[in-house]
Length: 456
Image (cartoon, rainbow, N blue to C red; front, top):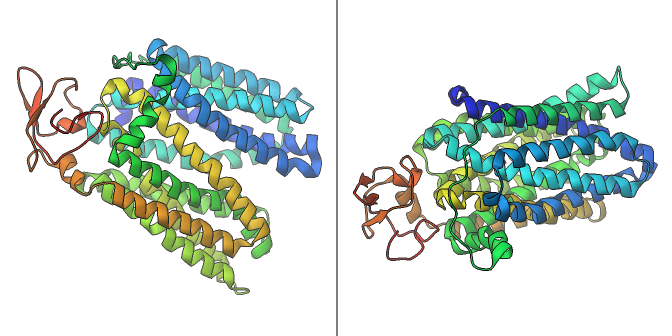
């Protein structure tokens, strides 16, 4: 997996992602303490509103950035986003009103909504070989999971010697280091994107319209919802399970969240070899189908009272939730890359970023409200039903015939020539070069690579 770090530009961009993640993790801890200082017992409400504003910023800003990305230098866009995030982090310790927290958090997350999809769209261009790109996706997933374990531990260690407001300086340092690494990287220019009638609005909605038009991307929307149901249950209700249901200490909350991250990391490490032999569809739908089964087990676990076995059972359940979510999330970039030519990737990644966070915007409050008012069993059953419906819809919407189209150069279907794809694009595996492009045949596919049923 680490072999992709030999690529100099990718190594610098990955380093930028890691240090920015650590900075964000420190800010998460510091923000909770800041909210408590300002709002006291209302700190939970402040953080909940800030989380909702984060999702709104992600859902609204990312498509606009995708629409304008072909007009802006991508390196400058990412560096500017990092500098803006650093400036916000520097200002946060000086706020003393709740509304000021909301404004700064919205600006911070808007900058993140500009940085992340741009970064995600650059990576497949840097690593055109499918094998390398798969390993980069697993490495990125691993970075997110390690950050969820490392940042709270680092914050706890720092808080023994400095006040929480100094943690924001660590956040500033992370974003500045990220900006320096991005500025030193040779980021490629985006491929020319086809003109979209209607200006900025048409460009901003182009990725979303592609999601609705392409069967595998419609399935990906459903997979996003299944994962959002699971991650919301873990993120929102872990503290309730550990402190109220099991009467354990605050330190065990971090241990439970660590179990979720450990399950995700284990799958991220195993997936590169797995995806060499098994199709994306099989892996991703398999992970989604496992989620309602895990929700059913969680509901059964929650309905029991007493017994020392419940704590290790919860850790095992959280680890399995993390593993199932990672099966869905890690290959997502491969699916997006196969669904559009290079010039459309920026808009497609922006649409995925936005639409996936819309799913979380729905499931986070649902998990919290149901857990608080109807109980954890009801929350597990309801979110499990959401995951089951979403997983079933994904399996139905994603044609099984596309598995053959992804892995075979020959088969049923009309022979056709691709003229706009670069050598090494994963869709061209097994295609023969011709004077006008690359010729192959495969099972019918209707996406941005094949805009009409008759050809490509």
